[in-house]
Amino acid sequence: MNEAPQRNFNSVEKVITLVAASRLSWEDAARRGVAEATKTIRDLSVAHVEERDVMITEGEIALYRIKLRLAFRVDRMRPGLTPGAPDVEVTRWLIVANQTLGTGEVVAEIDRLNRHGPCEFHLLVPMTHSKSYARARRLSMLAADPVTGIPSEHVPATDYLGPDTLGMEQAQKRLDAQLAKIAAASYAASGELGDPDPLRAIQAVLSRSSFDGIILSTLPAGASRLVGADLPSRVRRLTRLPVTYLPGEEPGEL
Image (cartoon, rainbow, N blue to C red):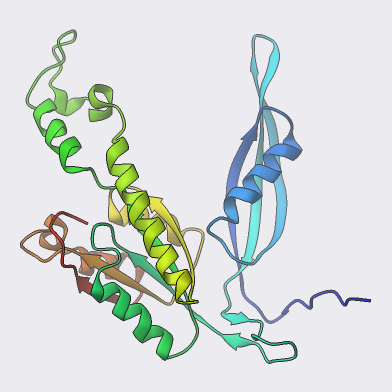
């Protein structure tokens, strides 16, 4: 008979809260919430139901909502590679990049870290605007709404332009390509697209996961407005984590 996996009672766990919804049932909402969380969080161990409610439209239940408290391990021990082998300690690194993702400096840093011991990487790609969208957004801010007369700078650009589909597609392609490259090298990695503002994107990830350090890659100072805003120092102050800054090679912005 197979033995149940033994839980490490010396591990440290982090608890987060999320709200999930379903048109079918609270049970389906819970399944959806856990499934979404496992896309970017390892070692989920407990899901506790805090609240349940429903949204009602025209006297009928339109949506089932559930608030969950999720616990997951933040220790760095992982099972050994072979049966009976001792657990190994890994370090976890958050890589923040967009147009410089996959360049030589980022790849070299991943290789260097792995030579010092087992690592896990989470790739965060802020969904910055494509060049065509950014240009259209700047032009929209020069005009006023033809109906209200309100200057466009007070109206979200998406009201005029819609979502930046091209920018999202470009970011997703870079992320998918880099994840495939890391997987081919037998390194452990996950990834996601984040808020266009790198600081907000980093905060969102850190609210539900933990890392030993951050690898931040932008374009050279002459090409990236973010370096001019002293992004590396701001990330250090925000996270209080070691930050490795790697200037990229390609034109554009983070």
